[in-house]
Length: 302
Length: 302
Image (tube, rainbow over all chains, first blue to last red):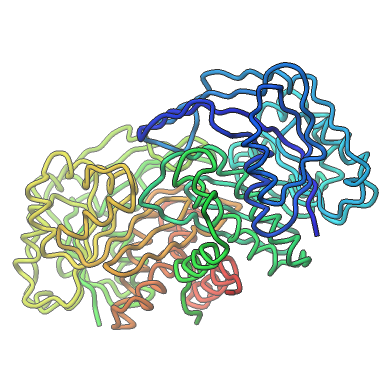
C-alpha cells in the first residue's frame, strides 16, 4: 500500500529557547512523508527550486518516498522562518517566502492516479480539489488546513471538505471553521460539512477524535526535552495515516490506534530540530513508545 | 472512613457568557466537601459570618458533612466575585472580600483529630501546617495551593509540602513553584520537595499525575455544556480524595481511578452554576460517566 501526499517541501529557519538552525529541511510534505514512511510507501507531489540540494532528495528516497511527482523548477525553494518562546505551543512566523511554491500546480504522474490513500497537506483548498480530481477512486482521503484558508478561501475549503473522509485541524481552527466556541459542538458542525471523522490537534495537550458515534481523547506524550515543535502536526498526520494505510482498517479501534501512532511520531520529531530525530529512528523505538502511551493512559474500569 | 477538610465557605457572584448569579454558595471547602461526600463522610473546618443562611448548612449536613468544625462568628462571610469570557479556562477576579476569613484560625474539634485523611484546601500554608499539627497520625495528606501563596509565602509552603503526600496544583502554578518551564522537569522538582505524588490540573485539558516511577494522563470529559467552571478544581480534588478514602488503597492503580473520579465530578459541576448540578446527582450517574471516560480513552495495545 502507498499513500499519495501533496504538500510543501521547504527550507526552515527556526529559533527556539534551546538553539537556532538556518535553512534546514522542512515543509508539510517532507514531515508527513518521512513520518508515514515508517509504515507505508509514499508518493510525494511537491515542487522545489533549483537550489534544493541532492542530499535532501536522497534522504527522502532512502526512506522509500517516491519523488516522481516532485518537480524541480527554476527559482528558489519555499522558505519559512519562525521562532518559539518558552511556551512552545505557538510559532511566531518571521518570514514566509513562497518562491516556486507560489505557482505550484499539482500534476500527478500517471503512476500516482490509482492511489488508495490520499493526504492533502495544508495548501490552497482549490489545489487540494485539483489533486482529488486526478485520483481515480481513493479509498481514504485525509485533509489538513489552516486559519489562512478558513478565513480567505472558505468556499473552496467547504467544497473540498465534501470530498474528505478525515479532517485534521487544530483546536483554534476547528472553532474558527465551525464558528463555535464549544469544541464538542464545533466538531459536530464540522462532521456535517462532509468528513466522517475530525481529529482535533491540541499540541502539548494531545488530540481529540470525533465521529458520528464516538469520541476519543489522547494525551500528548509528556517529554522532558521539547526542542523544536516545527512539523509536529504533519508528523502526527504522517504516523496517523501511515498506520491506517498499513493496517487497511478504518474502523473506530484502528483510528484510535492511528492517533496514538501519530502522537508517538510527533513526540519524537519535537525532540530535535528539523527531521533529525527521525533520521536514526527505528520501528522498534516507535513500538516501544506506543507501549509507554498505553501505560500513560491506562486505568482499570469499574 | 471520613475526610478532614479545611477550606473556605463563601458566597460567589459569577458572570459567564451564559448567565450570571449573585451570592450563591461557593468556596473551596464547600465544593470539596460536597464532591467528596458522594464517597465518604466529611469533617469540615471553616468559618462563616452571621449572614450565612441556615439552608446552606442544612444542605451540607444532608450530604453527611459534619459541621462541628464550622465556626459561625460575628461579621460577614467570605465573598468572591469573578467573571469568565468564552475562554472558560481562566476566571477574572473582580472582587475578593475575605471578611471573617481574614482572621480564620483553624481549631479542630477533638473528634476531628484522629482523622486518617486530610485535605488542606487552598489557604495560607501556615494555617495548613497548623491543621496538620492538630491531627494525630494522618494516613494520607492531600494539599492544594495557588500562585498567591507560591510567590508570597514560599518558605511556609515549602515547609508544609514536606508533610504532604499528594500535591494538587494547576499547570502554571507547578511551573511557578518549580521555577521550570518544562512540566515533566517541574513535576520531578516538586516530588523532591516532599510529596510522593503530584497531580497537575489542566482545566479543559485534563490532568497529569506524576510519582517516582509512573506518569498518568487523563483528559477532561468533552462537554457540550460548560456553564460555570468555578469550583472545578476543588470538586476534582473532592472526587479524587473521596474515592481514595473509600477505596483505602493509595497504590498507582487506585490513584489513577481516583483521578478519573475527580474528573467525573468536575465534569458535572461545571454544567451549572454553583453546586447546583451536584444537588440531584446520584452515585449511578457518577459510575455511568466513569464508564464513558473509559470508552473515551481506550485503545488497543500492540
